[in-house]
Image (tube, rainbow, N blue to C red; front, side, top):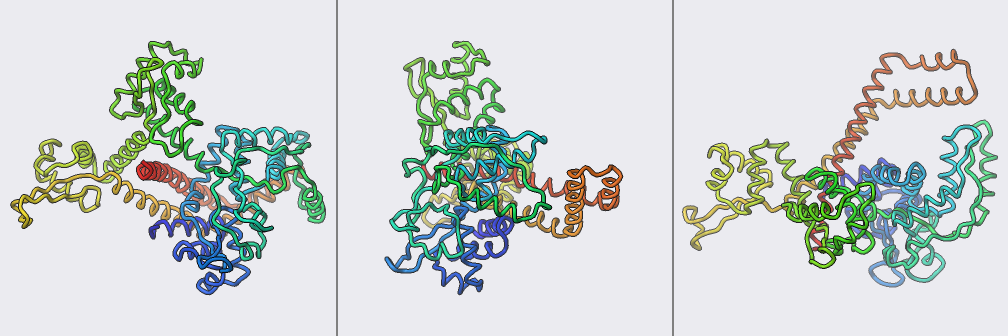
Length: 545
């Protein structure tokens, strides 16, 4: 774990959970597994606040707890997961993907589960139905069964999964990690490390939930808190058949979807839309049969691919064979041939595809930072592996002085490495070959750290901009709330205009400029995260292969 990762994790924890949780989380990242007493002593935070912070981290799957290293009877130790914290950065992308695949209902289900860490199916269905009803016209409401169907589809496609049960016996250890946390719960728990959800046999089994009804509109503030609390107590006392079964978002399934989309998009850009649809069909067919860490998909025959193609594309069999041959012969090698039976057996080379996408990302970075000639040298070294300076000048067709400057610039930025091969044991310069090379994996790791630093800078800038205009933003929110309240009560247009004029023209311009700036920073964060995802996928794929 690097300093840049810890810094980014700290910013994400502060933005989503507050400064106290950030302090506890970053302390555990730096110090490793620690017991409650040590955390309190080293952070200087009160016992109550540390317990509440640990509850928040455990609830969101960021922190795991286990029996102490000294054996049975030793204090429970807590440890935070850096990779899980960094996934917070990808929350908007998860929500947008759910909206694209399953509409507004899917979007709200994923959003609720990400916000709360984990929930029961009945609780999620009720909350989402209420939220959808709130945005509908008067007299319309969302049926619970529609939300339940969307929830079931998300589980069937493995985008949601059950939280694994705690290992070990006992009243606390046998509960799921999503049991609603109280300030004393983590400190009292003694458990071993959590199992993976997939090791649990009923991971994707939807329980039978007895939930009949429709979403309800939220009570207005004038109705008082007493009615709400009484209603909540009544709802909590109801049973729906899924008590103790908690659900969480399956991030790995989303990552597989992002990987597949990146490969399909690359094929469409390199060849054409029809080729990308053929690759999409192959990936869809092998979703269930291929392991997430596999280098390539299971072999598929041309006959199977032909039968599975969408009928709307109307691709004849001879044309499909030509496209498959074209994909196999393409230098990017996204598709490979694994045999001749069934009209030819074909696979999608997942690792090779990720390596090519990472390589294209590195080339793009070099071109943006150092120009097209430096990118030409970089591509040349990637292709030829090892070259002397004179060979680089000749192959790249760049004057000696310029080539030398560019190579030394790339070398100083660690994008290019220099390898010495001596002719004699004394390493005399006159009798030594100096070869330039590019090691793709270490270069990708270095670029990944630069991306973490970039995202952290963007978040800090966005927080600074918001803090500088805090008074103006609060005023705008108050006026928007007043306007919404007046519109709900059927106020006159003159009253609405009078309230709107409480913000002056210069303040409106300042607000517009601020929102535009913050939107640009948000967009930049999401774009950098796409690069982070590609590089992380390539590095993980290389490690497993």
